Length: 325
Image (tube, rainbow, N blue to C red; front, side):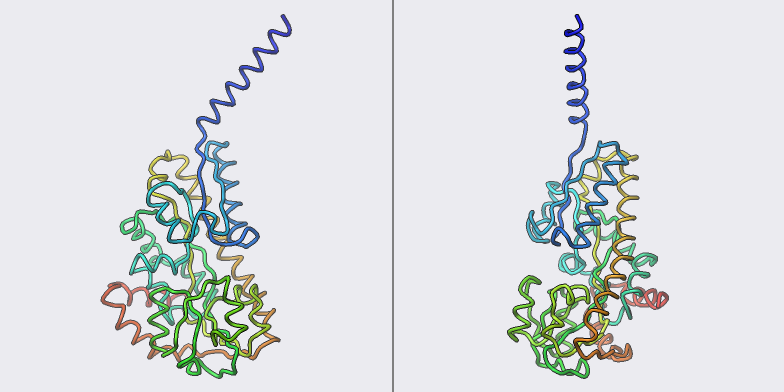
């Protein structure tokens, strides 16, 4: 009799576990950064918090290092609903949504700290998140960032004017391409994994990226000059598939939205700390040249002439960004 009771309890336990598992929603989060990189570790923390706050009803697995494809491929998966979440770069979004190039406009921000405040508190960045839903079928939940963009050269440089005619590695966003055309450089779209070799072998003369990336790649060991240009912002966005979002009940939507907001806050605040650590790590290895913000006045004018017809609120975006200096 006792044995029969134990068997019944075991069967009941297995049955209840199976029902719980069947009711759980298993989701996937795609990201291009390596497993130990800040964006990945904070995304994993987001996944754990959502699972804990929903008592396991929502389970999120994070796939780092582009395991599910490059950003363009993962964005397509989001649109189809075969991928649920993604932390996507602003450069990728700007290739699909013209208006997102406004956040990558030259001279919009003066530092990483300025950019973080604007993304976190500005109304115009929030307006852009709404456009993602309308134009590409994903819901923007929160901003992160890679920091402000700088330029590191493997030749002596005194100003951005010295980049004229030089081969500059860029992140291939439409905003960056037009900015480099105005500077009269020869922009080169090279994957980040190949940048160190290209820079060391002088396949390129300069690299346009963020301080954290420069330091992590060790570019300062092969560099001559760091141009602290702060010429554009490198935002990122936590996004969810609209198909996934519509399946969530109101309670779970609130949990996911709150956890994503916290993820965004951590991405912004911790990136500022990493920027400072990266600057401290490279400043003694290179000549540091600070670019005066006034240098961008004419560049801004030329860039805005190209983009204002495609971004009706560009002037408003610049005006609000100035309020956060």
